[in-house]
Amino acid sequence: MQAQSRLAAAASGGGGSGISGSGGISRLGGGAGEEHEAVVRELTRGHELTARLRAEALRALRGQGQAEATATFILGEVSRAFTVCLSIMASASPSASPPQPDETPPADSAVSPPPPRAAREDNVPRKRLLTASPYDDGYQWRKYGQKKINNTNFPRSYYRCSYHRERRCPAQKHVQQRDGDDVPALHVVVYTHEHTCLQGAPAELPDAATNGGAAAAASPDYFPAGGETPSSLRRLRGVGGGGLQPQFVDHRAAMEERERQVLVSSLARVLQGRQCYDDDDDDDTDVASLGAVHARAPAAAAPVAASSSSSGPVDAAGEELDVMDYDMTDALFWGPFGTDSNSYDGNLTSTRCFDLIN
DNA sequence: TCCATTTGACCCCT
DNA sequence: AGGGGTCAAATGGA
Image 1 (tube, rainbow, N blue to C red):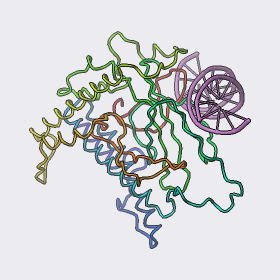
Image 2 (cartoon, rainbow, N blue to C red):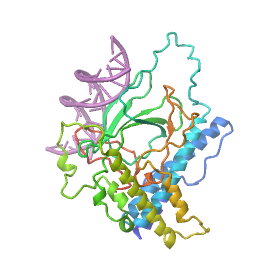
Image 3 (cartoon, protein in one colour):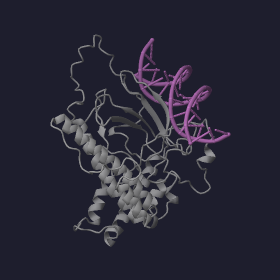
Image 4 (cartoon, helix red, strand yellow):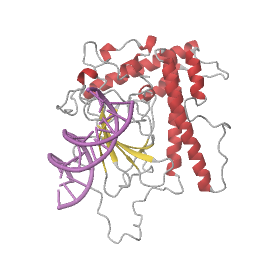
């Protein structure tokens, strides 16, 4: 079966930087810093490989509703675990502890730097995340600018949803590598607005129980019948995003609810039929517990804060950051960040979520 | 030729 | 006035 061979290839690291021959964890060095570094390195590797495996699995299982949903869920959870571990390791790094608010400035700062510029008070909700990079968020983003920010070592890149024009999607984000010796490099991602680009789809959703409809609906390839395609819109310019749609919340909530139903339904079928696993162990996971897991995901298709405690990482300005996490529904949507598409003029042909498209 | 990416300039907010 | 955010022309690669 082609799907199986693809999965096998992915699992064995086919296609490039595969798993090393030994397949084992690098020998840990003597010092704590060295050990920490080794752990982070292996976690990063695991994270990357999981992302690749997930991409290959979903590509192979595309259209096979139950199997696709199951693979998406499991691999999404694995990816999430890696991300959380990396974040924990980063915050515990002996060489990269975030500055404390009352930390004394460096001795060589003869003139104290100006205080950080206050954030714009535009009532736009912002979601700040600290992530290992590149991380997968599955949306198509178009880069529209990059800027060197004062008193930082790395430029900030600005992205907006690829469907900014076609669907008036107001979602934006900017990404900036955090200063410091983080291994792997950590990036501060700030989301402004949220995606509305799925809101036109619900009525067109195919039955997820038979063909993985949530993924299809989320696919950037999805356009309502008779609607404009990305290529037909390529040359449209001028009219801006238009801000948050008044119906945004309701549409999004409807989409979330439908996604939730789709996943729970698919997982229920899988579990009832035990179709996808050769269970060596008696997995006593049941539908109810999965439903409970899924119920913790009210913010579908958006990053979820892993922790709301005030002891988490902070950015250079001392603002608290959420550690990147995924919820279960995210697993349907979040894909490689990889090469960023970034032209301003409405082109949609480059980067897309390979989980869903390839 | 098309399309993605870069980057300097401009706008607007603090 | 300074700086963050955005625009859009220029550039380069496929």
